[in-house]
Image (tube, rainbow, N blue to C red; front, side, top):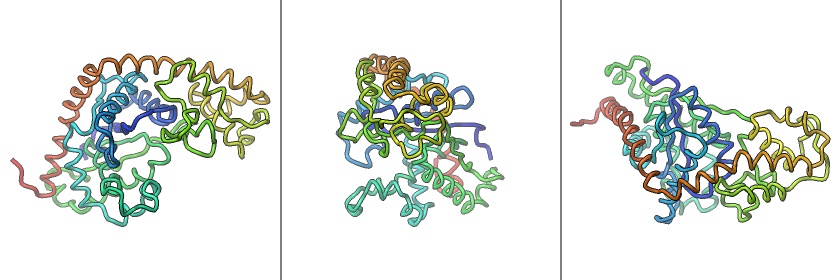
Length: 345
């Protein structure tokens, strides 16, 4: 198998209001992986349109995600940053995977059930089939690793199932075209960090979300320093002081969430944080968390605002990244067409 060693692929949907959960659960880790892997980071705009998007807002959101990537420290010259729709191979490979994946596999996807709810007959076909597109996103670049949150593990398992079935279904043709050990890699997940799942600041049992009607439930990456400080101060807590051991966070979702956020922002473990703040009242702990959050997130918001004021510069980054991504993608599509038996020029 000729897949590139240690190639990472991941993407973020441009659906507006990137928040602390997106940063700690994904983008912060994207930045760190640049030191050890070849990285391809994508604004997955084709995924966004599985539900209707306002065209004007969609363009703004695509640029906003790109600005967040750059503001957080992703280097678009050393690695590849682009938006998915500029590389047609994503859609081409997704169709081939639609013909490889089984309906039963997609019917088991819990995220579709959650998003569609009781109105399954009226949602788009794209919303049902988008795990196949996600598999195509990853395997188009024959990526070996994907940084994912817990809620995306099932989709990566599907990606591995599709890769395995393709390799099995077309094994003689794959071998005949010089790929002795199969064509697609079985991509591995990269799941790490103390706050891979960041919860609402208003309800520690709910995931932090851009769709929550309360803006105080989340810290947006575009928030300024004063807004960040105000949201942390108003975050829901309980009346007890912080415990000295992690075990004491059980049954205390708001405390567990704030300790996890502090740990992730400071690159420490929850246990280390509790060594410093165990027995402290939340007033003292929140004051320290305000300082930390403002220090880490304030410059990101300011840089995003600066970048968003120069949309042509953002577009240039996306065009350059798409040109470089297309070189890899076109080779994969050509080889896949040959393996499947499609005639091409």
